[in-house]
Image (cartoon, rainbow, N blue to C red; front, top):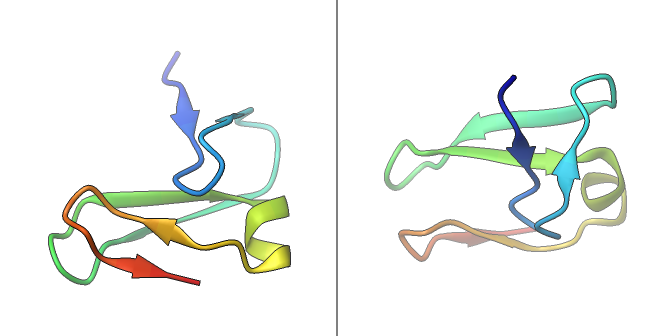
Length: 53
């Protein structure tokens, strides 16, 4: 089974929990965010250096 890690907090996201995934606008790598980080607006940073709220 694939493991998903939140890009913001680096915690594993259980596949049964709500999360969001989207492509980085700079490099098109997938970014995953857990519901908690997304709700509280924690920042994330892609490997390419792109950062967002």
